[in-house]
Image 1 (cartoon, each protein chain N blue to C red):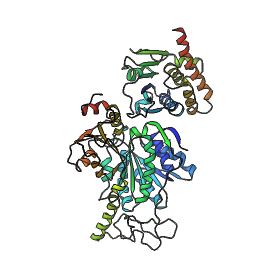
Image 2 (cartoon, rainbow over the protein chains, first blue to last red):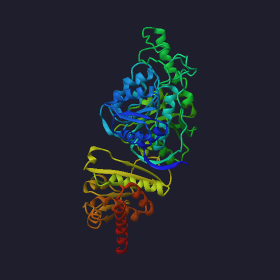
Image 3 (tube, rainbow over the protein chains, first blue to last red):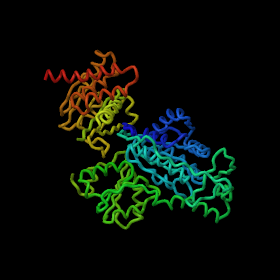
Image 4 (cartoon, chains in turn purple, green):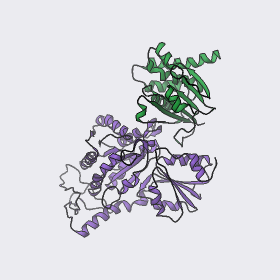
Length: 366
Length: 180
């Protein structure tokens, strides 16, 4: 039996995490993400989970990495300023192949910027913000329903690929309340255990190593230094470093098509909007108001790895229009994969693109 | 049909709670769709606070209020900041105890704070008097839906007080209808 609720996006995120078996939350409250932490603080202890408020976001990120190595399904939630502080340890999670979920309810930046207003200014930071080359997974909800569903999915992907997975929401989706259907149960992916006798960082065919279960007698050295399959530092071997970084990169990039998550509307259209996060709602309104036939819409629920093959879903496209709550972070990525003109519609300040403005842009009065 | 309702007053009156209750009534008890949003900001602490609800029979796409159909205004500053620009066709329900301005659109005066204080003994339920008046005047949700949503949302032990406040809101509109 599913259950209908009227729920805030941030609470739906926390509920999704609990449904996905999250049993450790380490974080530091920050607007507009605080409700996620508050809800976890109330709920986790009742489910024998652990909630801990750390001294800052650097420690928050460290805490979920440690918790994950004990076998916990671990998450944190933050916004821009905290996200910046997490960058160093996010790289550590990538290098040590630690499953974890990082929720970023984005607000206006740089710096402390606009704590209570929406933005999507951290889309490139979540992809490239820590030093070195790597690849991660980022999901972008555009409804309260997706705050729940994509949080569940984030845990699954984190466990499967042993990688930090980002839920890149924004203040509008995080703070609004709307109708949500909560399923009775959700399907969960559990991490693949390391087979005794196999080296701890020896990958399977999917390039992901099995995870040594805590307390089962494995002795594993976990380090951010370049390491061999035993986990031992080996930081001056050029070939080994290249092999390790390429494996960390390719375990995500090779799965790009398989894990891609997007919605195609009106694939025959010539004018195609591309969205993620809350601007999707403005574009859905434009499609509705124009009779749901003439305008195409590619809505990305997963932005990283970027699903470049999705561009071909619109063979008649003459123009891709990309409204974003930043100065065109995804539009530039999109542009480099197509010869068809890409129109950026950046918006700063915290307000959502008005459907009327988007209609004017494509020359439709409605 | 999409209906946009905007609430404004000062921080502490329960402006946001009112909107949450209205949205909850629509979704949980009238089987409709609703989106509730609010202005978050330091100005909301004692200053003018604003929240909004969109109610529709269809899923709600654009989640922000653009041109409100209905206003519920509970402070003078709230009127000036969020109510003064009301379109001619809108309906505005005003707490006449606290707001001295009147809009160009249809205006329904409800002395909610006075009623809450004198008839119910607690200023704090003025927002629920206004919710009752809103529903009786506009039928944006059903009376039974708002009642159930209020009972879900108020602190334990205050159900009776809030129920009386809601009923007083219904009555103020119905009495007004008889005298008009």
